[in-house]
Amino acid sequence: MENLTELGWIGVISIMTAGLTISIGAIAPAIGEGLALARALGALAQQPDEANTITRTLFVGLALVESTAIYCFVVSMILIFANPFWNYFIEQAGGG
Amino acid sequence: MSAGTLILAFLAGAGLGGFFFGSLWFTVRQLPTTGWPVRLMVGSYFGRMAIALLGFYLIMQGDWRRAIAGLVGFVTARFMLMRRLPLGRSRTPDAVG
Image 1 (cartoon, each protein chain N blue to C red):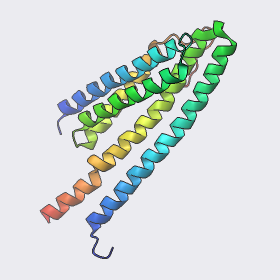
Image 2 (cartoon, helix red, strand yellow; image 1 turned 135 degrees about the horizontal axis):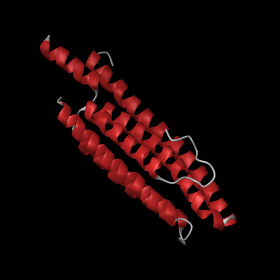
Image 3 (cartoon, rainbow over the protein chains, first blue to last red; image 1 turned 90 degrees about the vertical axis):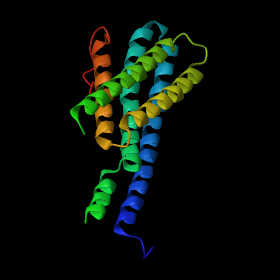
Image 4 (cartoon, each protein chain N blue to C red; image 1 turned 60 degrees about the vertical axis):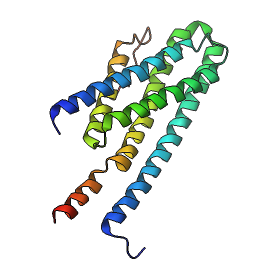
């Protein structure tokens, strides 16, 4: 690890942060979506007459939960494919 | 980085969000009548996610500003879709952010 440059450290930390981001961003929405879906299916089985209200509320909840996963995905994708810090230091190295 | 490409990324993200949450709405609406609710939800989830992830990869084209513009468009599409949805009969949840 001694001959790792500053640029190398930026790469290492970015990739590890991307992995951490997407792992947390996959686990938490999965738990939330599972809970919401289980409760909604239970409610649908108990009150089939209220299906419209239940499905609308379920849609709003699932949309909020799944967009959390999308946020985390976009952040980790930026870190891997379009890292602004990486590009900044590449430009510094090229210009200086 | 011109404003045109950012606006294009925003519109593409909005289209992607419209597709994603529109198909989520169709899936959820089928839920009371289907015989395999878990299979329906899981299949829909993976299909929607695959298309959304591919779409974001194509939108960003290696630039983080385009990715953010696409994400803002995605969230805008979600917001518009939730506003259009007639929520409930007696009260409307105010957590639409």
